[in-house]
Image (cartoon, rainbow, N blue to C red; front, side, top):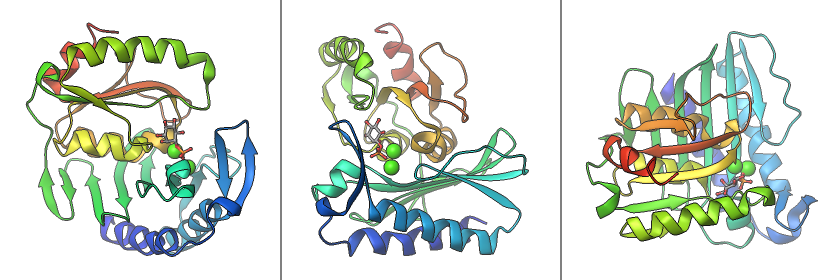
Length: 252
Ligand code: IPD
Ligand code: CA
Ligand code: CA
């Protein structure tokens, strides 16, 4: 199952790497921060088409389509390009994120950064991998670690809260980083390079695959209230190693 998904996702990465005139390929724009390019749509179309061949019984939810959550037992939740602003400006940090869910359970997750050729993957109960090598979260506490965050760029109502929390996290930790791809950030926690990632109002396609990868790597994935993340609505989320999580929630 995972081999089929990773193969398809890697192939789709080729569309990202070979894209030209990315900034002029914008097909939709909401405010001054939220863009869609024809490449987001092309990657999603490719994934829907190819994965449907291998999983004819599955339904598809993707960022770039009408999202009616139907009633099929298997559902893909897909972000074709997580980090569209990075992509448009050739910042070279964007990922494809593909999760396969059975009911409310994520049973497989793949996050691929084509620029670094890093493929993060997990199947429920079978551990998490980076390019086929098993990964786990770090044991570094946040006080000796790096914190990642997202700015909730499409939700300005969250800005003050995010930056106030960021200030507390910055004071508490070694330093902070902002990649521009939530899916990649979660994988950075999963493979132990960083300790905490937090952002308000993330959508299911930003986090579904990363959540399984992180949990299979021994991490904690919860919302700001300490509850399980829902994959049918936006969530305020924290992803961390268990030690760093305990410290982080004292700063919320
Ligand atoms: C965005 C990225 C970004 C995060 C935003 C997401 P998109 O996804 O993950 O890092 O801060 O909240 O919406 O729009 O590039 O797919
Ligand atoms: Ca996204
Ligand atoms: Ca996207």
